[in-house]
Image 1 (tube, helix red, strand yellow):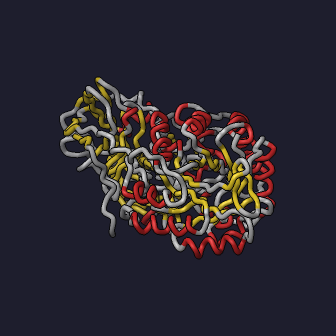
Image 2 (cartoon, rainbow, N blue to C red; image 1 turned 90 degrees about the horizontal axis):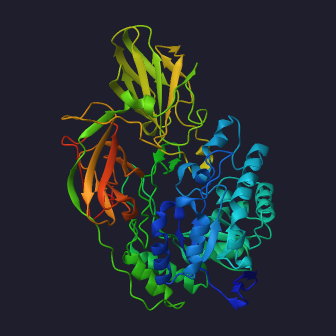
Image 3 (cartoon, rainbow, N blue to C red; image 1 turned 30 degrees about the vertical axis):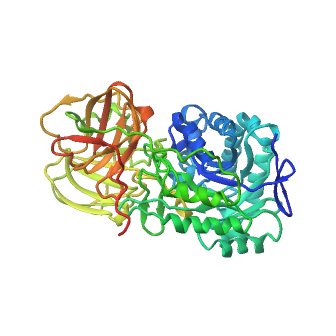
Length: 583
């Protein structure tokens, strides 16, 4: 049993001085068949600990449902870490940020129109207490006090950037303790927020990625004694659609790490291995302009999105070796990748035509939000009948987040939240025309007051000054595509459509799906949701983990929301393309 102790001089493990050398590795961003590989490489770089958030929204998709299976089998992940000789820093939230959908807060909280998240709102705290009970009860044997790998557990996450209610933090800490957490607790904040986000009697840690000496001094000023720990030592960054691929010089990042370790600090590299926002799980930021995060969470980390060592792996390993023993094993080689060109997707199914097979319609006077429809991810198709023909001005009070507008199935325009667009003019061809509005949730905001981010059409819909009433709301979560009726076509259908193809493999390996010539949508391999693509960039390929492929026949489905590649083909290549690194 290795129990972490905190005293005025720093960390101790089993009575001996201990430095936390950790790296971020989110189990929910990595295919479970690849967990062991990523953990082994963490040890080989010289780390003695890994850190992971816990996504409440995936584990508890509805108030009465809790999952801890498959890719969410946290006990299995913790067991693999222990088998590799690694300790764990566990960060269960309830709020995690992490550039993750809604900061990990489940969308069903927003069914209550006046709920106040991350506060002492009794409804929120009751939900959090229930979550902690469901999550932590199966994890009792995973705490270091009982022989498991979990050394410490975080309380909330960068709360000082959001609020200053210490009673709220005290409630969370008490709830963790009541649920059996008997290892040390800690908080993390950026240096300027340490006072607001701290809690007496709980270890305070700082998040930063540069000016290590200055930021550690700020932490020491806040806490004159005890360990110095950077819970998020930023060594890369995330990307947003329409931006550029953010990278950081390996030598400069290694120099900052050296400076922190020379000062005697412990660190958690954020990230050691970023992984992927599979499916629709990416978050977004909204600092007066909504900016959704891309599918890749490569993060310019020591292990890239496919788990291959980068220059930072070697640079950081050399720095760590100055302060702690590093395994003598060589740096792992890049794994083989699969290549396959011009895979044809020659079967199609129009989304508007097949929408009834993807979700059941709900009638309402005004459009319902995703949360009112009890929907987490995906799209909502709103439809109403227009009474008169002629020129018209459509105004959507709120677009959350991207609305494609159709008249009798023909596209008349797109309105994007990101561009602050709300109005569209067109001509209604006839009385009785069906107005369809397909709204995509591009990721709930994961940081700041914008986390109260309800999706769909939360406001009024007005046509020529008169509010439109009498709607059909059809949730399209796209959790299953089994109801689609694909048919072979020689030309691509117009409008949002699913395109299907098959390909044969004699063996499997990681690969990257390239959709050159396609515009915007999502892709699935053998039913596994890879994520979103968008010609807007910067990301121009999707990571395909080897475990989702199989020998023999494989199926690929692409939902293209606009214009498909003229030949309707895709390529699988050995290298990724995350886009240009400058604007």
